[in-house]
Length: 488
Image (cartoon, rainbow, N blue to C red; front, side, top):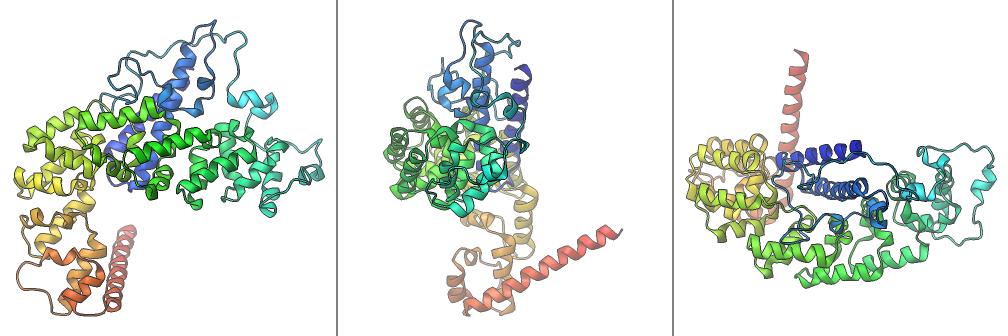
């Protein structure tokens, strides 16, 4: 158990670094990393409690089924907001304050095995590899439950025949058949089996009832496969549990049309207690961070993971830093968080300060930086070398513009240099329609169609053809440089 909990802490620390330092990650990847971290926190908490339980008292069922993890499993005593999980910094160890990694203790008399042990024989539990077919003919594998009415028979029987080699129970065929309708394949089932085998004990009818509820709530059928792989426990959640979470989202201002998107982005939210975790988290955002109650729904839509990510106590130090470093009033800081909730988790040393220093280095005053960050807080997530610096150089050298123009059009920093800024500039130059003097940043703001109508006076097709040719030329030049370097 020492080894397991120690390894878990190391992995969580690495995920902390990834979330805090790698600002080039796409939003969806950052969300997946944050989700993985939340899942591992739940597992770690349960493992710690199992290892600390007295010899004469086995852990409860929730700890044994540690994959059910959620905020309810964390040690919440002594917290002002019991459902909000804290850490001292994004780079700190994830172990709970005051908890020491315990010595390995003897097993309890009559202790229940872990989830997989509970249902599998010793032979099946050794590893998740195909079993020998000795003693079981191919006919046995092919004709199991031949009288069962299947929805996706052509796929499910073929998949299930392979799954039986891993020890899948014959009774699970109807459930596997139903889940195949969402595109799950052999690899998905074996992954779920290894991670949370207990969900296969659910009947096909119960699973269909629960997933139908989610579909009716707005979850798209194409997203269900990803949800099931990430959060297979969803098959076990009762309808009342699912409904309470949907009602919670509606109560904080999430439109019914966006409920499905929230669940798809953060399915682990369904494993957190509404009363003990989600509501206290919202209360923390309102009372401590300062977000307006009417804006909570918008914040959750921008970053659903905010409901399941750990909000650490270092937020106060970040807020104080912005206040002292830039003279940012509280309402400006609140606007930043409301527009870009990820700011709650950014590191000062590795994220916020280097970008502020870069903006200072190009001639911006603190008041200018504050205007830019209040309007476009995403600047704090952009890569210095691959994003901010190249755009600044293009602004000065090619567009012949001034840094002060960024305070009026901070959006320039968020636009793609290759896909929008350079093509539009070069296109107007090629048409001899580029204005004299500093190139207007306002020409980068409208849609392609509006740009062609107002600035270029040409067809959208002509502009797209020009842009495509420019992109191909740029790609060829980059490839050529790489080839020359590789020959040296």
